[in-house]
Length: 532
Image (cartoon, rainbow, N blue to C red):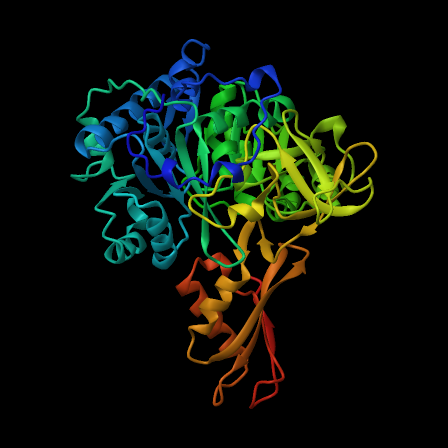
């Protein structure tokens, strides 16, 4: 029976006939009908022998599973006792990868609330879209990221309370409030099909879509790719760059290590390729997650310094060129583990590791899932033929109150929007995105959203945005711009437009290359590429 008395999310799920078929074909996928995923992964750590093992690491702090549980329970008490939240309420989470962000996410879900994590680079307008869709009354926000959230709050008064974290001694901060609690908190007795999280993903229209995942989804995700492909152990120390606000980062840098009894290291400085290689060696990291772009940039430093403790390197978030895989293998001796997943599916569903790797292929379907390549009518095409990828398994797409559900799920199958080819041995080869999403350095960027930002500049008359292939980033955002009369198509204008986009939406979405079209009047059209 559901424990979530606030039915906001449940009541806005798609009609049942638009749901994906969910299959639990393996014994390990038989999740109990009543389960709280944080209770399962954290509270039961003691029974699994993990209580005194490290769980969360940073340069200044190491928390064991038992210590992390106590802190999570104190935060959960603040959420339910001080802030009066009830199961099913949404809580916005805003922060980079840190112990504070991890503890906050776990506390929200353990209390039966719905975690709505947001990217730390998002601006007020983008945060406003998320608030408008999810209707949270409370936000937990890294104190260093308050400004944009406070701007969004002014336009969305439904967000009544913002509690800062990563502040140790400030009155009203999460740490001070939690320190006043006794740490005695019993996990909310959620049903397996109660909602654990809403993960926002940009669509090709630029309007955010909220993919909804249950406690069952997350635990089923743990029993699929991590069990059968990744095979992490309690001795692993995990590092990586994907944000916890991405399901790729949430799984790889929090949930999956907990399932294995491993630990995660969060740095207190931004990663650079050289810094990540040095930290891998300083920390003794054994497992790394990042995008192909970063592995390419890390390779010369890995060759220079070595990475003797590293044993598993996971690549996802964008297509992995075979040249990058071989470059990394030549530098480190490690065969990179590739995979494709989706926010809508929670995590990776096609992947292969070690001796199962085939050059140029992402891999085979992960046990627990079924995948096929189909034509426009959903009919499977012959092996060796390019078509659309369709997937079915223990997780699937359910958008919150969004007509685009019908585009993603058809006849029970999930259509992630990718073009693939499958060979006679069952290996899947990625071809391209089936829509106009631009995937750059692991980030998804909707072209229309960038166009909208550019059109807000007073000098822009018309524009169009595409993804352009790029050796370093996989793709870059390129804009074609027609200027209004009286504006010079020069390098200064390129920089002005780039700076404008960075200030309007998340900076990683800005066009690294701008070409002024011949329709522009005035000086000879110019183009410029920004490599920063």
